[in-house]
Length: 446
Image (cartoon, rainbow, N blue to C red; front, top):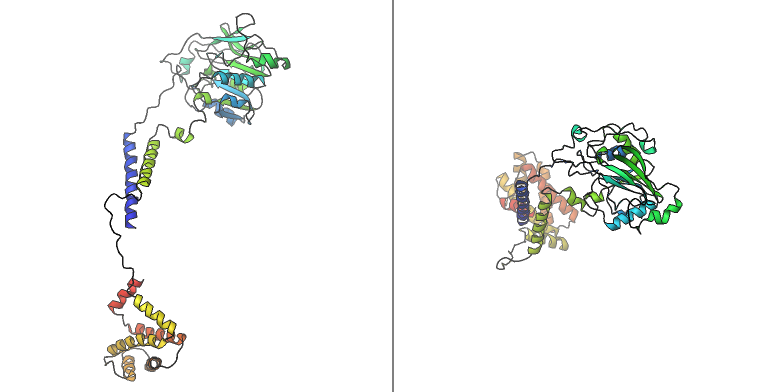
């Protein structure tokens, strides 16, 4: 037991030292400030360039909102039935050609795709009836621009009003974009040379079932161009907003930006999915490792696992010369007494048991009475009664019954037990202690 305790204490001390060592060597990375030149548009991000405020508002307002952390191909066979798929800003992980094709197929089958970015990715916006759109940027943010400062982000910018009343501009008087907002140009069919897209499912397969015009519609804009457009694609719909600042945490509270975001994302009933897979939050990552990323917890856990493996590997391995096992004498000092008692019980020799106990008790009583051992029992009983409250007749009767049993008078085990009990009561009443040897043997037996 002591050896096991030593091992356990050693293990605890090693773990404690590892924790202290990792804590001392851990250097916490300073939280980097948001920059408009390198924004983080994730709905998990609560900084000024993030979109967590929009996600939480929609969720708390009763809209069905999820964070999409799976590849785009899962939209085609998803059991959650996503109706609106949202991509905001420049993603951390680029869309592959297969993902873009799967997204186009999902839109053509009736999905609603919302793209909010200053630079339009042509792979994500398929042609519709020959019509196409492209973006024009008027300036790029620098490192000195603070996205949390609305005055810097909207310097010399005039609020933009809807160009016509539509479902997307309902209850919107004016929106406030940033000074880095791009403008959208609509290119009609034949205005640019474009190769036919074999994956243009909306034009090739489903346009025959759609009654909507393939031409993009401008909802908000100015003389420089459009800020918000949408167009039909097959049985689905595509909405493009050319400034993420309108829905970002730093700008969503300006003017009617929030109302415009609600109109764009919740324009139809159903499940709204924010793309987090291409923001680097895919479910392919280990959730446990991602939660403790940047902390010494993972290093401590790895070191503890290594120690456990070393202990298991070295278990039962000898590190020195073999030593004989210590020989422990497991025999009790009262084994002889117990054996004799068992033999007497089996042979029903109750007289021997009474003799063993009575002989000692008589010797103690004679010593206590101050007489010789061979004195008569009447004399011993008289002396004991004179020095205590024990009745003389009862004590003499008890001694007489014990001597009769020793001399051969038949008794059963109940009578033997009763005699022994009465002898012990006499010893207890007189305060007669057992000898030191008997005390030691009784303690070892316990």
